[in-house]
Length: 239
Image (cartoon, rainbow, N blue to C red; front, side):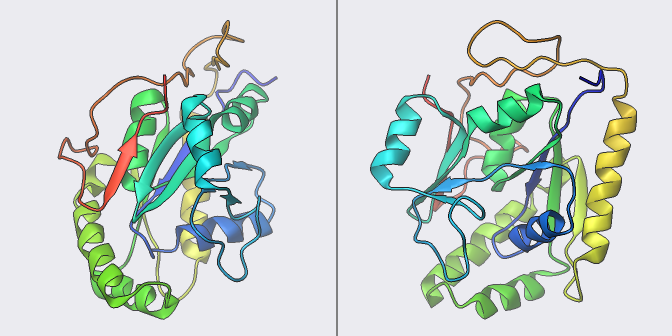
């Protein structure tokens, strides 16, 4: 195993900014990262593949995962539950793989507390007008839901300075944004070269610091210290 610390990269940003499309394109291009798959209780949309885009599970199954402490982080967003299964992420880090996690802004704050060495990338729209256009084109929200998402997106944009990096998702293609994410990962790998790491799977450490993904009990706030936004709730995994 390489002595270079495997990276935990968190990709976040407002709903509709294009996080899913960016990471899907990176997977299609064969980037050698472990892309964590989010578990969710929301209905599967046309064109989505279970186990690839999301793990589509029942609310009972999701609740069981919370109680068993099997989620790195979870949130209730617009009435649907989303969470990152912990074991695959830890196992990938044990194997020395760089991990990319796609998550909402509050979830990013949670992971940063659990794993302070994680690198946080905020994917930003070029403008709020462009974000509104993208959300309308998706045609997956009612007018009321769309209005709520835009209000929440504005609040999420205010947390941008608390992220390590910002990538603007332009409307004319993803190539530049993908190149910037790759450049960020390359820079982080160079900065941490020679460091060693630990991953705890609920038992003894398997190597040395800094990785330890055990959950901790902290209040639900944004990275900038503000209270959680209306319409969404982020939670630590069950102890």
